[in-house]
Image (cartoon, rainbow over all chains, first blue to last red; front, side, top):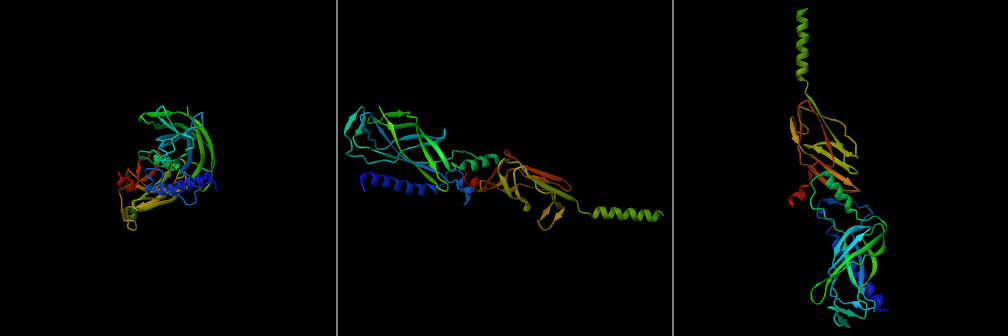
Length: 188
Length: 124
């Protein structure tokens, strides 16, 4: 088994483990009162993917963590998420403009659970909307957009990118998580 | 002749006054897409299931209903389960609906009906 395959399996294992933990918390603030249907096949609650940022010289940004990644799915806001933190000690090959670069690829794992942002439920219509929105995505093909990435450089200043990258993915019935794959982000 | 007429009149008055007054209550589901189940008012079951747009039968209640322990007039909220895509939530209306002696009450559940779930209320 080569190193690349091993890394992929490791990342997927972390994603699945974290998925199990987050499912028990539900996807919305009012889920304590909701009795979920056991027969409902629309259970997708979480997207996982890896992301890397590289320049034209094929150098990869070396960060401890990407602080914020804003996602849209089929044009609608999915949420804003940090990446999992990484130990990238001894991977830096160059420092320029307050940023560390590495000659080897650094993939950041992102776990993006769907979160309902409903703040209050006052009427019967609010409750029907809430129940309707809990079904995040039914089985089928979708497009995920990375609309914004934020991280801090070595001077602790924010670096904000607006990559507007698109990646298609498939939602399979009766699954609660979908792995979108690797998203490479060009960075100048 | 007069005696017979008076007797009949008296009997009629007694018969009418002894007949308990009948009230009715009916509920209609005007929620879009959502089903409402097990609707009750003051412990009285009104209907087991209402699809969107559907109204229940009129449920008759007499002045003193010993089985459900109701003595009209009474005011109660509606309690029901709301179901959408197989997911359920228990709800109670904030408003209490008054049913008087000999009156007919129709309660319509719409998107703007104010409701709450006691569990979520206790978490506020």
